[in-house]
Image (cartoon, rainbow, N blue to C red; front, side, top):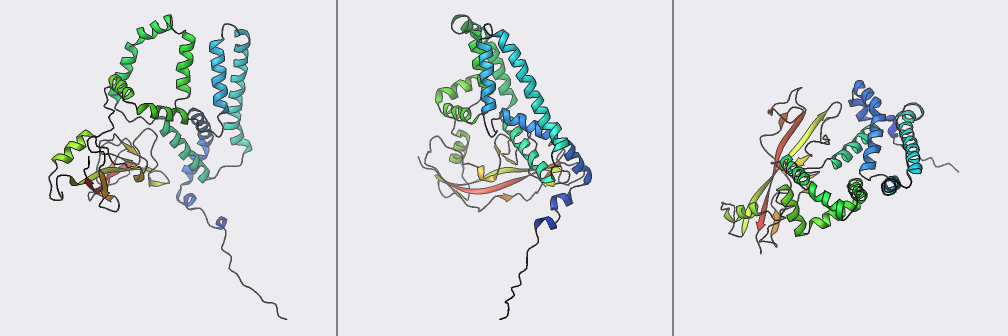
Length: 340
C-alpha cells in the first residue's frame, strides 16, 4: 500500500521578514531612542502614578494614607512618623531608580524598536491626559486672581470652623485624586448642575452653557439655495486635520502632549482624538433637532496641506526641510431639521 504524501506550503514566520519600521528608521534615531528608553520608563511610571492608570492603585492609596496620618497626627507621632517617612522615601526612591535605570540598562534584554515606540505613545497619551486644558489662558488668570482674593475667607474658615490640618488634607486629597477615574466621573456629574456651572462662570468668566446659542441664531437666519424651508437647513461643518513630522516615521498623527490634537475646530477650542469623536451641537430652543449627514465622510479642502514650523507658525503651502507640522481643512455637509 502506497503512502499518501501530502505536500503543504508553510508560510514563512514573521521573523524571516525584516520589520518595516526598523528598515525605515535611521541608525542614529534608533541609537537615540535606545539611550532615552530608561528615561521613558521612569517618566511613564511617574505619569501612571499621577493619572491613576497603573495596574493596581495600592501605591496611590498607601501614599494618601501615610500623608493623612502624618498631617493629622504630626504632633503626637512625630518621633515615629518622621523616621518612618524618611526610610520609606529612601526605599521607594531606591526601588524606582533600580527598576527604571539599572535593570533596564544592564539586566534586561535590549528593547525592540516597537517596544520603544509603544512606550513613547503611552507617555504621550498620559502627558496629553494631564495637560488637557483647552480654555484660554486669560480665564485661568482670572480664576487664579479670584481664588487669591478669597484668601481672607480661607483664613476665616480655618480660624472658626475647620483646622488648618483638615484644610491641608482636603486640598491634598483634591490634588492627589484629581486624575482618578472616579473623581473625574464625580466632577462630570457635578458639572451637570446649573448652580455649579454658574459658580464656575462667575470665577472664570467663561460661558459653560451646553446649548450653542450662536449656532442657533445662525441657523434661523440662514437663507441659502440649499435650504429647503425655514426649519430645514443645509450647513457645513469644518475641522482641522493636524499632523507632525517625526524623524524616521514621517508624517503621522502622533502629536506632542502640549499642542493641538490630530483633529480640532478652526478656532482651536475643541480637540478631537479622531473623527468618530465629533458630536453635533445642542440647541437650547430646539431639543429634538435631527442631524443627517449628506456626505459619507469628511472631505479635504481643495487647498490641501498648509505646512508650518515646529511651533505651528509661519504657514506656507509648500513642504521643506524646515516644516515639521502641517494641517488642512476637512468639510462635511449636514442636513438640519429644527424641531422644538
